[in-house]
Length: 198
Image (cartoon, rainbow, N blue to C red; front, side, top):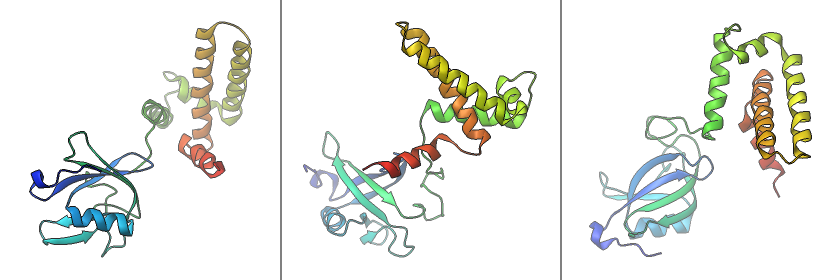
């Protein structure tokens, strides 16, 4: 690892990222000794500028950051450390030092899940297709998922990629609705898949 600590007055900024959610948890400073201790103990350790000593995150609270990997950037003057947090990272008790929850985020899919949730809560079935499905109940939602699944299979056998992708989008959309009707989200399914991984 080519780290230019001398040009950084002996300290280098370290960005801490959750290795699973990919959320940024905090930023701290490290020196050569803290980097070495992090590697040896597999617990992220910083150089505390206020205490003027090495400081292992979690040494008092028990909320350690278990090391997964260390990478340096293209200039060798910033570290990206991926870790598995044990409890909240911030001293305030928040998941991150930006006071954000450390939830898994699947980009547009997570936004879509939030939209489905909002439309369900607003329950305006005259204006919202999603709300109208929830109003009709679990049997109707499950039926729609079945119909969309059949349409995906039919389009998979044909040569029209646009229709195949369109029907696939319909299936995924209705499946996300079904998950919420059952009290789940996509992340619950992902956790099951992770347990199956060998």
